[in-house]
Image (cartoon, rainbow, N blue to C red; front, side, top):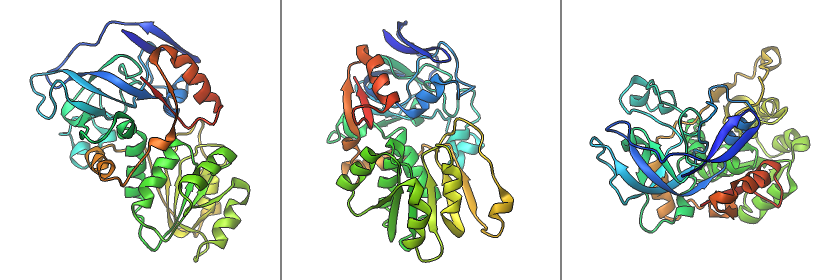
Length: 343
């Protein structure tokens, strides 16, 4: 089969590889019908994910059809259309039982697919712990509607949940990339008093204005003053940092009111400074990633009910054979790209 592969730092290649086989009674093999490219894939390419294994098939955002299941798999069967979770988790260890599935203690636990074990930018993928890692897609939900459930939508849902958003809050979302928009959509479900999105890209700001006109928008240069002017207590009640760019971590805590929650959703390429003397007296609560992707079934129900729609994010579509071009467009943010569908 064709599989897009991490060869070495700075280089991915589309290679021929053997089709994956079941290795454990809890495994499933899924035929990938639609996949996507995530910014985390670019972090692997740039060498920012030390645990990523050269030779691994990349990709962790996909939907497909179950081809084979191990003898212990009970929740899915061959022929089922499924979302694939970005995380592998056993469901039984201390962390899984408490909902912290990103910290699963299994050897293949946490973010494994497309990082430490072969992922889904390929024709087939093996999914460990299939009962936890796969969710059946309702018949009325298309592949494109379900494509982001297992990764960026799970991330946005997790971020909104742990940020404890209330209807009285002013919420600042920093970054209007794909994960930022998914975080925005999941925050909107909480019906806060006000949502502000900070983004530097004019194209992405236009996207927000066009699709979510009730959301306020600002650029990073004027963000702090804008938030002060549109909040009641000296800053945002909740800040979600989803950009991971230079200075966005500092911007996040500077825009937060005293005693606010700052949730860091972004994955950074370099260490960030926590200037505690400058923060003294703000009494901030920081919450950090990665995503605990255990809400996929609920997310699918919300999509089925018409309460979440991420299909506008898909701006480009390519077959797997043209994935190099898809990466070129996505990595360089050309042609108004937000998300690419591969299939």
